[in-house]
Image (cartoon, rainbow, N blue to C red; front, side):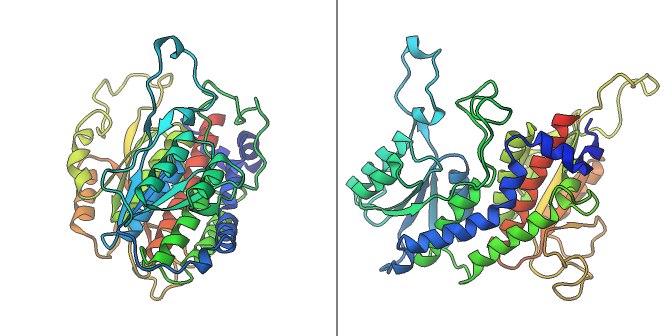
Length: 427
């Protein structure tokens, strides 16, 4: 069981945060500003597109691929956005199977869809820039006549390949946080899988910021002209609210982490923006907290997850002997539904934007008896959880701009995943 008093011990959290994940997340806003400035210096502000591409293909892995999925959510049905996940490269001969390559990415490959051609744009994004599969993909796209944009560290093999295929090179902004020492907890080479290191939790914004600046210029997304700079401000504000020395009752990320402790989270989302945030949260819970979680959109999850409510995890009562001694037994796991939503307008009862419940601008926990309007899917979700004694917690962003709502939800849940992992490691 998680001792939630650990969340109110900033010194203990700092000792447990070996790879400085909290500090990296606190710098997300700065990375967005730096990425925008460097993208303009690289020539993005001088770009004069003739029109929108037929499709935008986003290739990468990890948070680079997540950035492509978030772009698809923000673009909606107005533009075709296709994330390109990696596949296996050449088969590994039997004698070599026990010997892992120096980096997991050495065994990855990417393939363009058969229909991709001169009308399409390929965006390749990489935090390291050393993936041979992405270099090969750039050469493949050049042969097909695709327009190409590459986000990668300067001087990397991928950045050099961008020059060869006449791509627009955009720099990747690394974290300003010094990495942990090699071999130390959280550092390179530590743990059972040194070729599968934990990803920088704030790398998402270094991939997403230049991608959104580019697609905004091309008309793929309909963002306001100042949407990206304001996103950096929102990330800064969340970092202040979720700082380690803020008490759990005032820190929404710590409160969310405490709610999820000892549960199997079901991350339900209403709408594409909240859906992208839920998928991201599930990945961060697995990576940062070592916790499984299932994510999905309403109303599909009502049938997809229905069986879990009638199983052992969803039972509100213990079917065994009520009077047995449970002191030496571990606490049983139960379901916890977390419903993420984007609800344009101020919270119910707050009057105007900036009123009670929205003075900090962050996602607010919605009371169970909230009188505001709910969709059919959200209403049925509450009924399903109540019928099986499963706790449902609802968080809503009241930002009208979809990018700002996405930043609200992602920043909060990123901090919550890190806090849950740090507190669980100390318990």
